[in-house]
Image 1 (cartoon, rainbow, N blue to C red):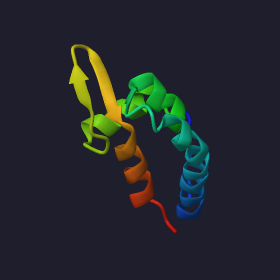
Image 2: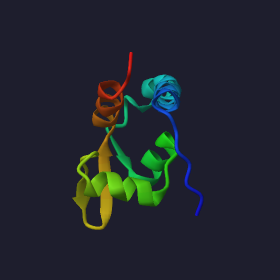
Image 3: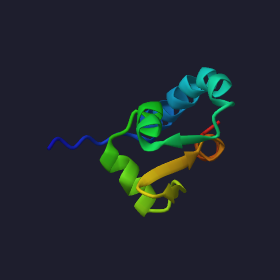
Image 4: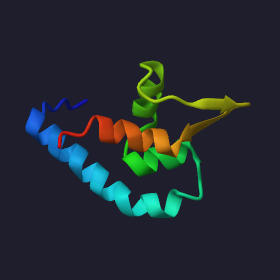
Length: 86
């Protein structure tokens, strides 16, 4: 397992890249209010484990219906905007 340490500037740069990448997707996803786990992982470019940690830590709220997890798209955008360093 490789562990990489990133600086605050590198992390903030990454957040900005994610926000910029989400802007065009936002226009497409407006018709879709909820996303499934696979869509969120693809959107944020994160692993299933990272998404699970975000749920466990309470960083990303979700709704479970049966065995399927749903995430509110607008909440994802709010979290990214809130954590953005403008």
